[in-house]
Image: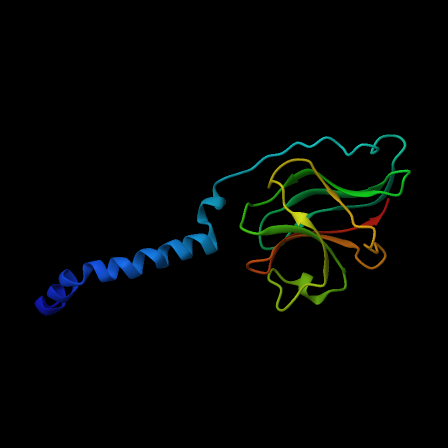
Length: 169
């Protein structure tokens, strides 16, 4: 660099730092890079009623898309009609704003790693952990004949971490 450019930077280093530091904080918040190395584990027991009196309805194996993802997704129905999604032997990458949703297997967005536009889905909640067994309540309005695929989905980046096409048990 020329002496003039070095002199300009040294006189305005506080301005450069004042602009650069907030930009770094925003970039960190948006991408959350530390989550690439931090694993969160959970081991929830099966929901009450997922024993002999509960009926397994659907099941499917999770397959990775944008991130390696594996495990089994199963839907159970209790005698009172309550339905639960249970992820077992589950593992995926950690990330910001990752949700568990039900989607339609025919949705073209699920054929790619990143969804362009909106994903037609039923929200089940934020991913509790990126490893371990976990449960999610299904809303009564979830039509399983229409929404037949479990998706691990990062809403911030429209990334499909993994999918499981549900088949009748």
